[in-house]
Image (cartoon, rainbow, N blue to C red; front, top):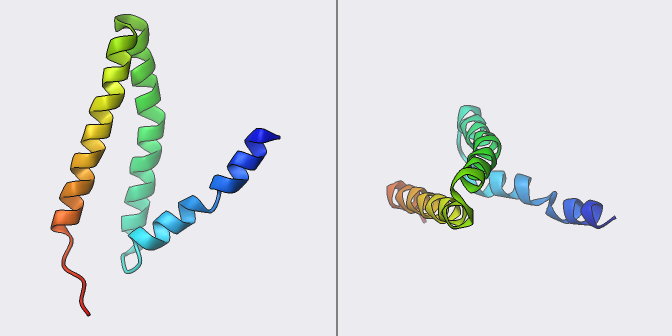
Length: 87
């Protein structure tokens, strides 16, 4: 029951993110975002598990820290490259 309630609560987040992030873009842009997100959801847990099993917990946590820093860098670059809003 808890998993259902959690999923039900998080369900509206995906369309909201897509609507806010991509209000005036082409369908290929949203397809690229979906593909990148799903690829990361497939690859990174497997990679982190492999590091955790072979190198230990400290390196497994380091993978998470590196991926968080990478996401922050990509988001920061995206915000810097975004054209200013017209008023």
